[in-house]
Amino acid sequence: MISVKNLHKSFNNLAGTVDVLKGIDLEIEKGEKIVIIGPSGSGKSTFLRCLNLLEKPTSGEIWFEGRQINVPGININAIRAQMGMVFQHFNLFPHLTVLKNITLAPVMLKLQTEEEAKENALRLLRRIGLTDKVESYPNQLSGGQKQRIAIVRSLAMNPKMMLFDEPTSALDPEMVGEVLEVMRELAEEGMTMAVVTHEMNFAKEVATRVLFMDEGKILEENEPHEFFDNPRHPRTQDFLSKVLG
Amino acid sequence: MGDIASRIYQDFIENGRYMYLVQGLGNTVIITLLALAMGVLIGVLIALVRVNYAQADRKNPVLAVLNFICGLYLTVIRGTPMVVQLMIMYFVILTGNISPILIAVISFGINSGAYVAEVIRSGIQSVDRGQTEAGRSLGLNSRQTMINIVLPQAFKNVAPAIFNEFIALLKETSVAGYVGIQDLTKGGDIIRSITYDAFPPLIAVALIYLLMVIGLTRILRVIERRLAKSDLR
Image 1 (cartoon, each protein chain N blue to C red):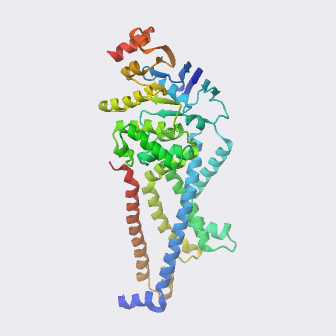
Image 2: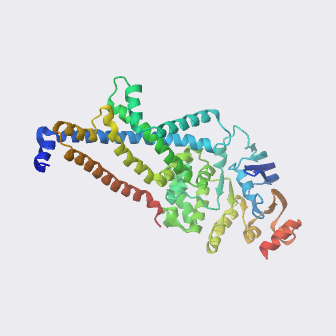
Image 3: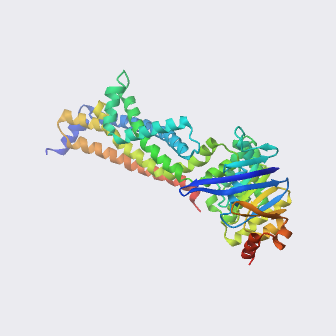
């Protein structure tokens, strides 16, 4: 579904050039659930943001459904419409109601009529048990509700794949569960997912593959049992011993 | 001092002199409203050019030229007095057979645009980058994201500053008399030159401005409250 070849990304700042990604290769098949873990600053969020070109790679190739997407002339908006993204800070549109948040993009991009989009939105809200919030504004919701609605907003586009950038990191602990629950259901339905997270239990239970990133590289990848039970790379062992205690 | 009642009669009632104020007020309101509309339009366009230029990582030459022109415009307009700009427009640039009111609208609009542009630019920059990213990640293009997601929030954030500009503009139009336009201030002045009595007409003019500003402030407060609807918890 998506494949990444020798991806490099560097940022220029006042101190000079910082190499954040130093050659990433990855192949994600349809239906896979990839979980990316690693210490902060390892480049995992940047990597995820490169997949839908919110960050432009410095070099390397990104292919989506048989087409290279980081080349001039590609309609990146049409690609992004097929790749949902969920952000750490939700990024709901605060000036719009929940309904409008969900229906804005599909209606504007003429993928659905106003009525279809509304119907679709209500169906999705029913699924996460938030139909009563349809006319609320984001500021009237809890963090967990916001993030579930952000997920639903992406789903309203009927994406082929979902990217999650630390979706539970900004939540109060008691709200993490409800968001992970929605993600779990999504995974069970066969959605292709790439998730950057610190939730190790989620990785263990849901991932088809776990990736460990550090200093801009993928140091280790494996199916979750093997990954957590027998980490091979010393950096992975070190990291896991710290986060799992 | 003389009998105040007879002075008021002489200044405002006799020969229907109050009409100078009524007509003047009409012109003041027309100039202010049209100039405000023009100023907001210019302001948004300029703010968009400047924000786009600042954010672009590849410097597009057309955008660079536009950005330069906008910078020049801001410098010149904000660096020279309004009344001088008005006179230049009237006596130098638009010397043909053009309605003085229209010239005033253009001059005040161009002037206001420079101030509005900076206000709107700060408004656009106050909107979290995550909003743009969320819009783009849903497949909206940069124009759709700007119009539907960023600008509405930007306007809301700077609404009080834009309203202040509106109020300032209303009072600033009082220099229109310099090019012979009969605005409210000029209306009072004409009465003074007929009756040789300064106090009642000037106080009347001042009061009318004051009442308009108070009224505007009220209206604007209501609008602001309505804009803040989505902030209520």
